[in-house]
Length: 210
Image 1 (cartoon, rainbow, N blue to C red):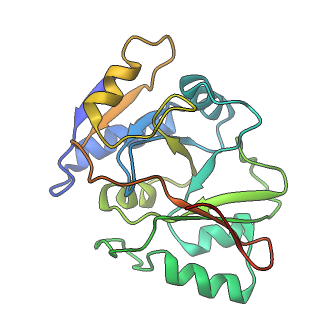
Image 2: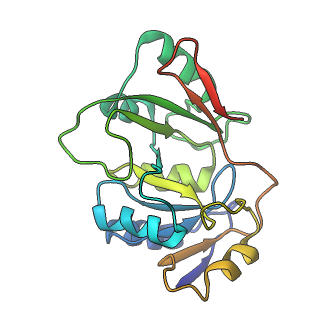
């Protein structure tokens, strides 16, 4: 379990490249987000996604959600009508380069009807998909430099509370048989809860987690 320190205010590309290389190799990384620390893996790599479930001790029937870089990617893997797209552009960041953080945006996971794709995506439901575009510079830069969606979930044992305190998370997993391959330590994160989850496949839309 390798640990790399990353300053989120002054991002070192070589350190970010270590995370990118790890994801490309099919490994699981622990990475800071705009809410809490999360486990990330290439969603098109079956073994990598299975490893997230093992590390987290997450029931196989409980799907993961995805991080993607922009709305164009969302449209490739989910069905979006004009009303849904308008709403998503309000709640998600829209800066094309993600060079700035759009305060107040990104912390909402949307459940949409899944679109059939040529490339298999693992760890999600067959009919719907939980997805979001975050608003956190290190994560957005990471997403912009990989060509696949990221399977993601909070970095905690299933059933336990999520955390933004890095020392607590490292302590929780350092003696476990199943561990993330790489930890990106950006220090303690501001106090946030995991993202709100809203189901856009129902009328009216339903908030599943606030």
